Length: 204
View 1: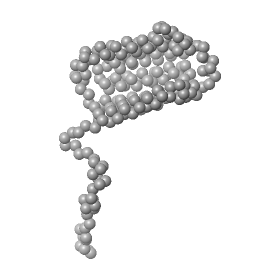
View 2: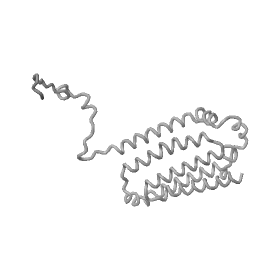
View 3: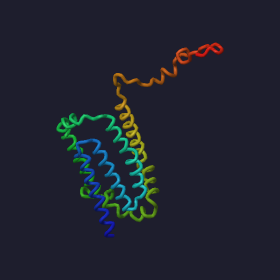
View 4: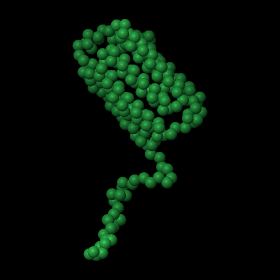
């Protein structure tokens, strides 16, 4: 128990420090790297509580796909850090409001505000039912029954984010030749094939 408690405090401290560095770091590439570190330590926390499936999904999906995608998008966009710093004070009130909303949600989930049965402290009554089945089946039952429509909405949000990332990277630059598939497919035969009649023993 002492070893598990020590591992919990170490992983939790690294998660909080990495999350703080994601926000504080001036370089977007460093922020994405700290985000990957936070994901790894969060996965370790899930392993400690016996949710191995969630830990593997967190590593495979978020670290292996989403975070790496963020890293490549940030590197390809060539973000101007000076413009980002100039707009910090402009968006500070909105960011502070969103931070207060997230803090209220965390306090509500912990039961500090209006501790009902839906809070983390009120889930003790459902513990025997959760332990009776494995975590993968429990997640599937809840996700595809109670939260099915929200799951579909999340898929649409990810689709919009993917389209937005593609649109941001498709920039026209002078002097760069792009492939036009439609022109290649519908070009006439004379432009695609040239028939040369070579005489016998004459060469080209």
